[in-house]
Image 1 (tube, helix red, strand yellow):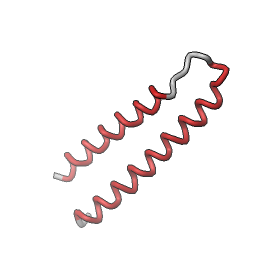
Image 2: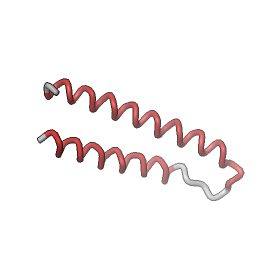
Image 3: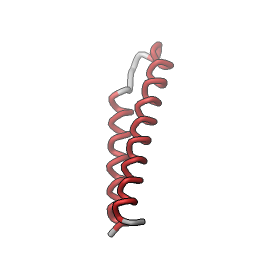
Image 4: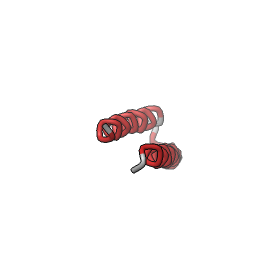
Length: 63
């Protein structure tokens, strides 16, 4: 089922993004802007990679 695969992909993406946020969490907020910038880059990179992966899956499934 395509819908189950899509749900699994969303769950996996959610876990990956959560890890990115947790890895970049800092207590010393003097680095706040740098951390936000790096976190945004990593999340966007992951979303782009996930989107291209999803596009390839749709093509291979014939959707």
